[in-house]
Image (cartoon, rainbow, N blue to C red; front, side, top):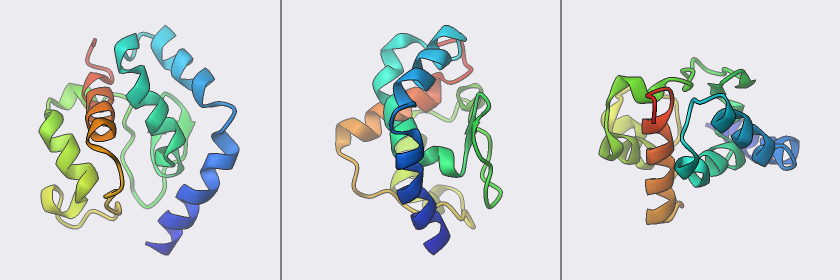
Length: 121
């Protein structure tokens, strides 16, 4: 947990100037529709890329899955929100820490981005 916290805190400095460019690349690549841009930007800015890979960006740590095509899994927005709030509740044994400090809108934005990822929008 300490490693994930440290990685999440330090990745922001690395990606701070690149987040908008990354999101534009993801939209241009056709992996997400533009309307989920706010969730994609939050994903890029919140340290998710310290453990997950998305279209070649980020790193895979502690067995975290690549999320490029997460939307093809069809888990739904509610699953994504629950997973962000408390990963253990929907994925027992998950090493991902909970993210309890997002606003309701941020949870919705992140979930919409994940559900649109690789699913053709």
